[in-house]
Every structure is written in structure tokens, then in C-alpha cells.
Length: 526
Image 1 (tube, rainbow, N blue to C red):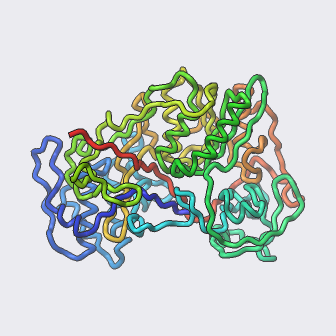
Image 2 (image 1 turned 90 degrees about the vertical axis):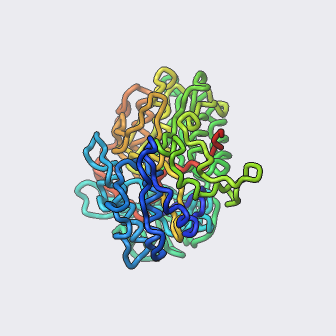
Image 3 (image 1 turned 30 degrees about the vertical axis):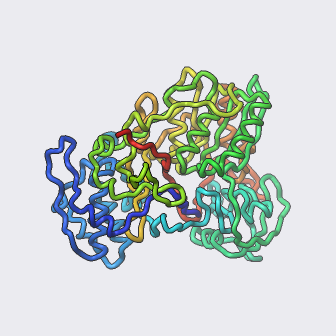
């Protein structure tokens, strides 16, 4: 549904890039000459050259990129600039194989013709382009996230609300996850992904629906509107059961910390006040976002005794780490308001920043009043990615301090992050750093396999203890294993009994942003 935009990238115009054409990529030992690239050409040709040169020095797997003459970036010039840059970036991302799979690190099984991590986006971020809901908390739509659902052998297709953006028109109208939509504009609801997507993108919609566990129809009309989005969808506490008081939190994405912090603080204050000693963090639809916010959540969850332990490291390629990527001089270092940052009278560039491993190692720094969490369970799905996986991986290194389990299905697998690079009318996001925990682990490029398998059961709302993923998490906390309570074998849908254990769903809408954005920078010590 939502393509999230990040205000964390610097603007680089064609003129600035053209001045870098001869900068090249010396080998780590400095012995190889820089690549020779043309100094003239069309606007698109220069953009293709620029993308190649940035990748040759800053891409995480830069060492697999051949010489300019062999790669020939200008061969990708076509009639459409965006598609040309996208095709070139795709070719770059398929050059390095993951030894664990013998496929490219950026191979994406659901869509092999696109890169798993890196992409080109229309619009240069310095021009202030925003999308429907962004990581700054601004939304402008109905706020519906829908899914087309079938059950077992039942031939009927149902339209469910998979999620609702907090603060949106749908939220204010009382629509929740798990609502079954029975009518749209007094007619039958769409039963295809494309139809559901069109509904989500409508300017107005009259909806008749039933809420989870009810059969009473409700009709509302909602209109597209601008709103402020809170990424903390909901929170509550369960128990005590067998001595366990459990805090439960749903976090939709890692918005900028100033946006997410107020609700995060309220939730953890409540958990502490009620004596929670375990926490379930629902990240099933969280594709990532700002690393600073992910770090803050990690510090809120951390029990006593983890202060100053290594949380994670951001590791750049050898050239960037060792200040041997001169093309970084072409990227001006701008603040959050896109203003040039100075050190004295010197205008700083990315070449002045600290990309060393030591300079990008982050430590636990306990936040909030909850100090007693001994069990943390994360609910995950295939859309759980990047900064969400970073939080989980950070705790995995410290089993003596806290027990961590994952429940759900295999995660997306994105242990990489980036800073945006503006090239003419576009912003390029290419994998530029990998994240490792204190044990140096972080190679989950094909996803994290959950400790406890569980279904994402859309017909029930977040926080319903009978929803299959949450039920499995609570059962583990209460009884030490999933399945401590019997699960319902059937559910009633529109007066019909269907198999609750055989649900298939297809999410509608555009793919949400998934990524790990690092906008905190340290100046390199000269």
C-alpha cells in the first residue's frame, strides 16, 4: 500500500557527478589505476556512469564489479531514464553470490528480475518528495491495508482488513484489523488483489463490514485525508499466568524517533507499572526504517545488566572503511533540513565522515523503566525486514541475559542498510553496509527461520490472545512451548463453518518500504 520515503539523503546533481568522472576506484593497496570514463555524453549516459562509479566504490560487494570497459554502463541507456538506471543497478546487484545459497546476495525469489535490497526511486529526496505515509508520520489516504483471503476448500474469497494506519480516516471510523468487508459502495466487495488495491487507493468509499467475533454489520463512509500516523499501533498486558506478566506491543514501522518515542514511552511505562517480566513485540508487518528508533526499542526492551554491551556494528566495504572511496567527496553532508554542514569554514562531504567499524559500533544504553524482561518474543512474517531483524539479531548474541524467540514465518532477510544517493532526478539506494551483532553474526540474507512456526491469522485483531501468532507466543511464555492451549479448529465466517487452520491470504497494495536507514553521522577524526 505504502511506499515510504526517507528524508536522509544528500542531493547530488549531474554537474557534481561529472566532476568525479576520473576519481575512480583504487584498489585497497592503491596500486590499480582508476577507471577511465568518458567526460561527455548525454544526461542519461552521465547518470549511468555516475551510478557505476558510486557502486564501484561504495556498494557493499564492490569487488565483484568489473572494469568500466567490461561493464559498459551506457549499454543500459534506453528510452526511459528510470528504467535504464534500474536495469543497470539490477545488473550490478547480481554480480556477487552468497556462498550459503550459490545465488546472488540480492537474488529475490518472488521476483528474480528485481534486486532484493537495492533500488532506484523517482524523485531526488532533497526536493522534498513525500509519499502516502512516510517515516515522519505523515499520511494522506484512507488508511486501509487489505488482504484477499480463502479458507481451506471453501471456494469463497473474502476481503479482510489486514491492518489500519493509526490516526487515518479508517481508524477514526472504527475499522480494525480483522474486519470482514461485506459490501463496498453498496455492491459486492472486490475479490482480487488489483480490485482490493484500487479500493485502498480510492478517494472515498462506503464500506459495510463486521468486526472480529461479531456478525452485526456496520456501515461507514470514509474519505481520503491527510493525517498524522503513529507507528505504535497498540499495546496491552496479559497475565499473570504461571508467574508471567506479559507486555504486548505492535510496531508498524520504525518512524523517525521523535514520531515513535511518545507512544513507545507510554507503552513501556505501563509494562513496568504492571510488573511485566516478558514482552511480545509484534513486528509482523514492520519492514524497517530509522536505525536510531530500532536502537531505542532495543534499549527499552533490554533487561538490567546489558549496559555497555555491544548491540550491533555497521560494517561498510573496505574502501569506504579505509577512506579509499574518493567519490564520497561528491556528496555534500547536509543536515535534516538539507542545509550544508560546516566544520569551521570547511563545507563537509561524506568523505569527512567516519565509516570505520569502531566508529560504527553501537552499545546497549538502557532506556525506560522496564528492567525485568527475561523473555522477549518477536512475531515475524515475510515482511519483517531490516531494522526489525536488527533488533532481533542484537539480542541473539546475549542468551545469558535474555531469552529471545521468534514466532511466525521466515523473515524477509535484509541485514543491510544504505544512505540515499541523488543522481539527477532520482535517488539510488544500494546496499552499503551490513549489520552484525556482538558475535559477528548477521548473514541472514535468505531470512531468519522462526523458532516457533505460526500463522498470521488475519480474521482476528492485534492483541486477541486467540490470534494464532500471538497465541503461540503467549503459550511459549506461559508453558515453555507452543500449543499449551487448544486452538479452535473451525471459525464461523458469514454463518458458515470453515477450517481455521487452512487460511491463505494475498496482501493488496504496493509493497511497503523495507530498509535500514542510518542518518546519524560522525565526523572522522583527521
